[in-house]
Amino acid sequence: MKKQSSNSHQIVVPEVVIAGGGWAGIAAAIRLAEEQIPVVLLEAEKQLGGRARCARFGNLRVDNGQHLIFGHYRYLLELTEKIKLPAEHFAVQKNFLLAVRNSSRSGFQLRARRLFAPWHLVLGLLAAKGLSWRDKSRIVAFWNRIASAFDDDLDDMNLLQLLQQTRQPETLITRFWKPLCNHFLHAPVELASAKLFATLVKTLLHQRSNSQLLFPKADLATLIGEPAIDYIESRRGKISLNQTITRLNIKEGRVAGVTTETDNIPCKHLILALPYKTCASLFLEHQALAETSYRLDRLRSTPMTTVYLQYPGKARISGGLKGTATGVFSWFYDRRFCGQPNLIAAISHDRQHLPYMNNDEISRLCMQEAARLFRHWPKPTSLLAIHEPEANLCGTVEVEHNRPANRTAVPNCYLAGDYTDTGLPGTLESAVKSGMLCAEEVIREYSEHERH
Image (cartoon, rainbow, N blue to C red):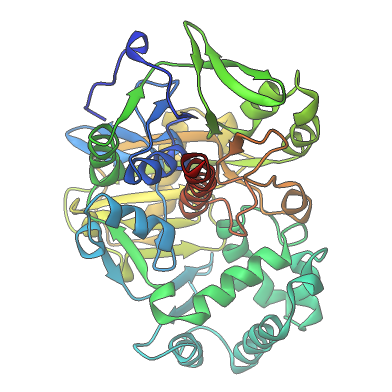
């Protein structure tokens, strides 16, 4: 992000310190700034955004990794409203289209209808191409099962058990449910949380707008990040980059401040919006936070690789998104809706091959898979591979049981991040929601203090 930050020596005693300038930290800072509560946002890197920061690709600005955004991301959309970016200015809305191809070039296509929920997806399923009537009836049986289930019923169940319970054929699990599970929960069906997956599917069925795909009209740093900086700093907030937190200063059971590599910064409230491994390490020396540190240590993440392919001519994907059930790159995303025609983002959550390949090898593999999937496209003129080693939280049963709450055992210390117990997969929406929830806790305490 272009805007320069405040220098650390200008920082005065703030009401709130937010450690971490990813989307959880940004969301918390915006909500607090809205209430005119003084906040200092500390970020270790030279730009905000965390795993959703900006990257350069020739003359283009792209996201550090391609993110899918859905209409049910109400916390993210609320964030855009706060910085005066209405939804229609933020993204292009497209009806949900699920198209997945397998190695034999057969596959299926399910397109949502312009009907009220849940018929937008029910009739879309009945008209879907590439699925037998038996497959469609089994999918409906699964939908009916989760619609009538209580959360407690699914608490300790993995997704494969739930699929077998509703008699999903093995071929349907491979072709339909596995690609969805791998993408949304970043976990295999035999480990994935049935409860978390059911919550997601019920959300998509609940309202037609929930299932719409939103294509941001530019990179997220341009659309949200830079206006967010202006919003925060115009409302008594300060942003300080290149600030790495090395220690929490806890006195008499409360956080008194944080230590960075260069400063001791006091505060009345602390929101930690740092990676969970960093928080686990910071908590180790504090007995009150030992249990939370233990829970954080049991969380797991998966890598994500995004390859941007720039084509010289027509390279378009109907509906904007297409998946494959067999390739290393599972989804291909059309960025023409983002104002970048003939630019395709390929997404992979592969843990077996890509982490051991260099960027040239990754780009070459991606180009080959794209050529097999889209045979009439020309050869790309340039490629950019971006690998994020710990991009996504694994949505397994064990991880769901260990996601920590936003409040910690230290009264004025809060955790924000997509890995906290938001009830959502580890997405941008989960990150923003966690930041908002932490800010609301601070606002409540701040208001009580002001009244007294």
